[in-house]
Structures are given as structure tokens and as C-alpha cells.
Picture 1 (tube, protein in one colour):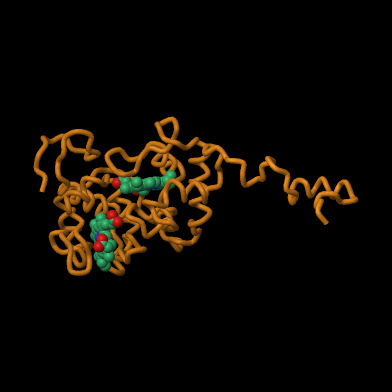
Picture 2 (cartoon, protein in one colour; picture 1 turned 120 degrees about the vertical axis):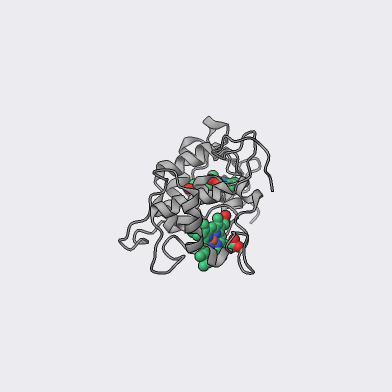
Length: 244
Ligand code: HEC
Ligand code: HEC
């Protein structure tokens, strides 16, 4: 049979015309190019915009593990939406919302936030316990932070934070100048379970860090940050210089 479309039943033919017949010039669904702003599938949006830094599954990337269930338990939607929309100036986290010069509509930002919760959130991850607040309530004290560092961090990161044979430095000036205080706080609370770094409960087993200790240790890390003039996110008003 040469004429594949000549079928007796007209309805059938019409159906086939949509699906199987070779009608030159008729676009198949795959040919219809979706406008980038029409994409609302959070999996696609995440893959296209976020996976390169935050990892394919929200972990194992260079940037914070935003797919971690503990992270998702401590942070609320507004904070996530805000960070995606506005970015974190001075770091690799750029502003994604169109209103901030990015490429994503607010609907797409919402879709990504919901997608993160659906894919990676876990209701019982804190097992009824409470976590320290996501954002610091009051500034920490870097002197007390030095003591907290010795208690909770030095066993792995070394007494000066420069690392040990198994764990890298966390006082490297390049590292510290590219992460905000909130970024550090997030890491101290959530850890990097994807790289075997404990969360706030398990640096010293049985002795979870208090909110104050977390703020203090972040203040200590922030005090190691090189002071850079210009658009640095560092909340410091001191004069430039002091790198290395
Ligand atoms: C049981 C060991 C251990 C303890 C205790 C520990 N860490 Fe870590 N930490 C790690 C490991 C492992 C990594 C990831 C691998 C690496 O960076 O070399 C890491 C990574 C980090 C990072 C970099 C994370 C990133 O991806 O940007 C920071 C910052 C950090 N730790 C801070 C701290 C602070 C502050 C404390 C104390 C409150 C602490 N850590 C306690 C093991 C530990
Ligand atoms: C070029 C790398 C890069 C890309 C792409 C990127 N991020 Fe980030 N993101 C970062 C870095 C670095 C940080 C840490 C910023 C800081 O120090 O506060 C971050 C922080 C975040 C945080 C805040 C973590 C916290 O402390 O609570 C969220 C949420 C986030 N990113 C979501 C996203 C989403 C969603 C996308 C995709 C739309 C995305 N990021 C794309 C690098 C990136």
C-alpha cells in the first residue's frame, strides 16, 4: 500500500493525520519550540538554572546543598524565593528574577521553590526536635566564636581552620570572600552531609550547638575574611587591604 493515509474510517484518518501521517511542513509537538519563560516544570527549570552549582540532585555541588532535607526544614519559602530572585551579591549566586535583571518569571521562581520541597523535603527529618533559626537573631561575638570553633570544629578543620589531612581549609581568603555570613550559617547548621560534614547536632555527638554558638562561630569565620573594598558582601566598613 503506497497511500498510508487513505483509510476508510474518516475519524481514524483524522486522528492519524495528527499523529502518524507524513504531512510535510506540519510541526510535530517536538518541533514546537517552547518559549523559555513558558517552562514551568521545576525539574527542567532546576536542571537548566541551578544544577551546575547546587548539584544535579540538590547536593554534591560546589554551592550549598539546597536539596538537603534539614536545609529545607529550617528555611521558609519566602527566604528561598528571595534568594533565588535577588541572588546574594558578591557571590556566585546571581539574581534570577526578571525584576532583578535575571531570566525567570516569578511563576518560574515559585515553581522551583515548590519543586525543591516536593522532591527533597522530608516531613520528619528533625524527628520532633527543633533546629536553630535559619537567620541569626543577633550578631555573634568572634572571641566567643574562637572558643566555639575549638570545641566544635577544630577536631576536623584544625585549630586554625586551615584544614587537616582529611578536610580542607575553611579560612582560605578566596573561599571566605565568596560566601556571605548567611551562607556560612547555613553550612554550620546543615553541614555538608553530602561530603560527610556533620550538621549542628553532630560536630560533638550528644552536644548540639546552641543558636548563640552558631552565631559566634560564624562571627569568628567572618573575622578571618579578607577585607575588600568595592562591592564585597562582607558586612565590614573597615579600610581595604589585608588580603592573605
Ligand atoms: C567531623 C568532622 C567535621 C567537623 C566537626 C566540622 N566539619 Fe566542617 N567540614 C567537614 C567536611 C568533611 C567538609 C567537606 C569537605 C571539605 O571541605 O574538605 C566540611 C566543610 C566545611 C565547610 C565548607 C563547606 C562548603 O561547601 O562551602 C565549612 C564552612 C565548614 N565545614 C565549617 C565548619 C564549622 C564552622 C564547624 C564547627 C562548627 C565544622 N565545619 C565542623 C568536616 C567537619
Ligand atoms: C553559578 C553558581 C550558582 C548557580 C547557577 C545557582 N546558585 Fe544558588 N548559590 C550559589 C552560591 C555560591 C550560594 C551561596 C551564597 C552565599 O554565600 O550566601 C548560593 C546560595 C543559594 C541559596 C541560599 C542558601 C542559603 O544559605 O540559604 C539558595 C536557596 C539557592 N542558592 C538557590 C538556587 C537556585 C534555586 C538556583 C537556580 C535557579 C541557583 N541557586 C543557582 C551558587 C549558585
